[in-house]
Length: 358
Image 1 (cartoon, rainbow, N blue to C red):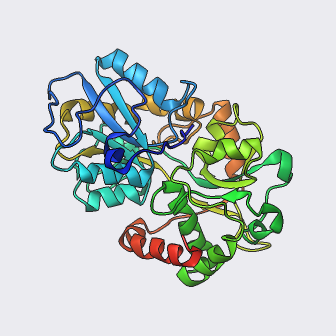
Image 2 (cartoon, rainbow, N blue to C red; image 1 turned 180 degrees about the vertical axis):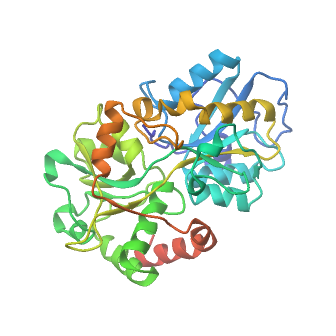
């Protein structure tokens, strides 16, 4: 489950990302004292794969990896865009070994020269659409964008985008901030597709703003609010929201259709992992990436993490996999042009800011 962000003084912001697992990073602004032979790695990751209860995908993977290799994982969690921004700030004093983030931010990291080439063992079993052709990143957990609603208060989920503008959702609808959160950026990507371009998409999001609570740097904080009824509608992704349904039973997953009578739509939003350029523990990082893509770990993705395996040769049949297939039944999946989105991301985010007054 994605944690709530904490307010920090701006001067300290770069040094205060939460370390969810034990391990301390070198203080900001000082030369790195990382020992390349140390039995550890540092992972910067978008939120969603680790559980506050300790029973999530990352929880098991990190524990098992350390047990098998003796390499401890130091984990730093943030929004997708924030993880890339931090890597860029630390370019001259690299702290992270591996980054896990969502599109288009993994492409952004590559564009900024923050990733190194490494093709993990087993990545040949990952579909071409789910990995970089140049070997800079690979999907470790496949996933899909979605919206969530409070089943108790709303009843049936809204069928279309237009339904989200209903006055009953005024002050009870919120989505995370495009350009900052991966799932927030996904709201804009889906709108661009469903409404047929930037103009009509921004026109609708301007209208939707009448119901919107306001910005949120983290998508994960919206799920508990929706479960409690503080919000009735929020954005999310299938893996994260399905994984926390046991602790948040009032939330339901839905995919608004472009218009009445149309099929609901969504797109793949995978967790993509890459080797950080000039990683202080590069050998350990490569072992970790190999481990993430290994068949035994990928066979656990749905059962432990509530997500979708990235390997073509893994066919999950556990109860979670069956339930996830049911959620996706009848949903039309489109393929975004990630390179085009990456190239035009600033334009889209600025258009969104103008349209919504954010």
